[in-house]
Image (cartoon, rainbow, N blue to C red; front, side, top):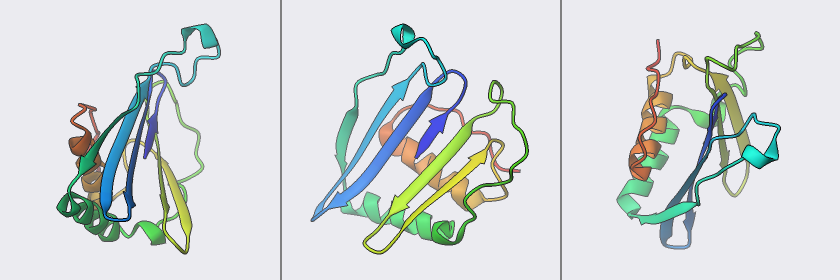
Length: 132
């Protein structure tokens, strides 16, 4: 999951390798800044998660019907200074899929629930706008 906006970018990666499960995250304050001298990123942080936490994540991905979702929530113009863009990518053994949308979120409480869960696993506080 990636959440860039005019002020920062927040990236979360969750994965399973054999019988271990982990989540990693980082935040940058300079996603849209073209002056690389100002680009700063927090170090990547990681932690192991339990199999139950992994299974809860997979359930939420299934509940939001991620693999069937459209790749974008419209092609209208957006003001990137006041709205956040979200990317959610997934890959399994057979397929790759990505969705992109602008806040406020599309009509999906399950999508909101999945994103909120990922943020809870990291322990980082990021304000999400609830779906309408």
